[in-house]
Length: 334
Image: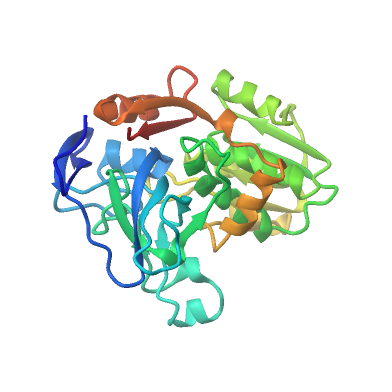
């Protein structure tokens, strides 16, 4: 169903587990922005936190807002930015100020003035059109399925997480949690030269995908050099700490339900472990796109379900339930 001239369909989250389809005026791009026609948006774990709990990391909303930040699009109007109409693109959902000390140091993802697509009060991408800074829009190969293209965003997180660790060349690696980011971390560990990649997840279908992507089941008592926590529950961090060798590293990617961890400091001290945290990604799209273009990383196995936008409530419910083998669920605009 098409929208009236000058209008667009948009998804609004009104409350916990309450997303509805609505109509809004199409946005008008400002200088430096391009107008994008959204093709698909995949539902991230952070979107599920907001959908099911009302906040993520303590950030909530005071009005209905548009969710979604993993999005593919076609350029509808380049608006003088140099982006040609009809170009297939993926959007970087983060807008750094490029002027603060963090940006000056190249830590754009830690910008003090960062704006992020779908983090209230900034509306997200789950609408037919979006005006977005052209500097945060990246062309992608035309051969790439637009419904899997949004998965470049969680791939970027895995690219960043693996670049924050010591060299993975020849390392024994474990990935705890085989959602989208965990499965991309499995692939990135291989790309970075890991000797062995173990994976664990309580959902059998996710473990099947992990095996397909080259991971081995995590043996009882296995000891690894680097463990990546990509599950979310607080106990997963301790699980990672328990499996790394003395002098090993744990990289935390997941977001816990409660904003706290219970850890054993004596273990960290006696084994001289490194515990580090990953926040999103930092300008990693060019590398991620190149890896997909070269066939070194695959996106398709991570996308398990597709819903048209008029079934958006079903899409969010499935993403929360993690039923039917769901990993990443897409909402599509036709």
